[in-house]
Amino acid sequence: MQRIKKVLVASSLSVIIGTGAMLTSNVMADASKESSDIEAMIAEGKKIAFNRKKGNCLACHEIKGGVLPGNIGPILISIKARFPDKSKLREQIWDASIAKPDTIMVPFGRHKVLTEDEIDKVVEFIYSL
Amino acid sequence: MKYCLILLMLLVSSIVQATTPEEDLKNFRDYYLNLFAEKGVKLNDFKDGVYSIDKVSRESWEAVEEFPPYEIAIDEGKTLFQTPFTNGKTYASCFKNEGKGIRQDYPYFDAKTNQVKTLEMEINECREANGEKPLKWKKGDIAKISAYMAFTSRGNKMNVIIPQDNPEAIKWYERGRKHFYAKRGQLNLSCANCHKDAAGKKIRADVLSPALGHVTHFPVYRSKWGNLGTLHRRYGGCNKQVRALPFPAQSEEYRALEYFHSYMSNGIEVNGPGARK
Image (cartoon, rainbow over all chains, first blue to last red):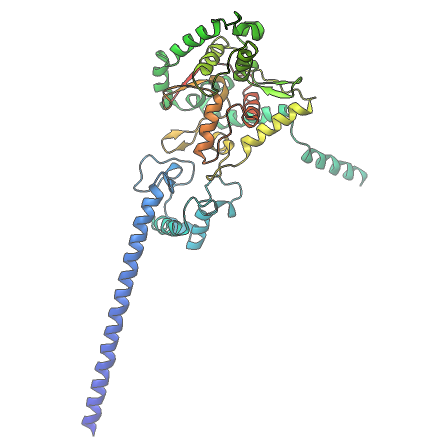
């Protein structure tokens, strides 16, 4: 009886551990998929941001990786510290006049200079700086 | 209490009352003189536009000015100006002082027609009055004639007059002022955003020129154009750059803008035609 109990415990334990291991590997796979998705968004966002006909962010902002930047707006650095809330950064790009009515910044979302999807990608890129 | 009320009323009326062109002019000048005070830029220096505030681009501009790309256009403009129309008259017959040294007085408000008249407009009116077809507005012969007329006015100080007692003239001025400060186009930028608020700053690798002194060097030969163009040609380009629909050259809108824009440069020497990137 004792033996049976031991076997049962051992086997159930192995099932639990096995399931756990499977779960963990699933989570890890999800996480790595997610991070590669974000990497792809950042890369696309960078292209949109640097494109003169799209974001053209370098017209006004110095950004790592960009040449001949303008200096009308602030240098885009330490963004996570300046925008702990990513949605505030998105709002800033969508329509900067919400936070600062007399801003010069182009309202990329409000004036449909970029699509919502393009703005999402640019936000990921800027957030990575 | 009574005094408090009077004071309050005075305060309110001073807020409600729009500033006069004279006050605008003083504020406009002071803004730029203050902005570039550290560089020691004086009022008349602004005639050189962006080269008055940016040493680096000034050097290459000075090199260009040694063999000015607009020189031939001045000669051609002079020839056009002196060549009689089919009726035997010349442009000189249409202008005061035979058209020499008068650039600084344009544009002006004409009380008879309630219009703001630009130099280019009067060049074409002169042609039509003498039985000739009008010229196209933005480049070519009209720019050359305007360039020659500016050249004969070099050194004269801009002297645009806004008759303060004429409400129609004030309307034109206010329309131009509004155009200058109003945001426009998909990029939502006003003239003032770039050429006042951000004057002297870099947009990509280019330094933004101050609006003070802009008009003194027109028409300009732009390397980008490869020829001479009028102020209204440039206005159209600016509007397109902010992704706005440009107004036609010599439209009321651009004449109003030129009226305000030129008045703001009063007291600065005419040095047109100029050379630009």
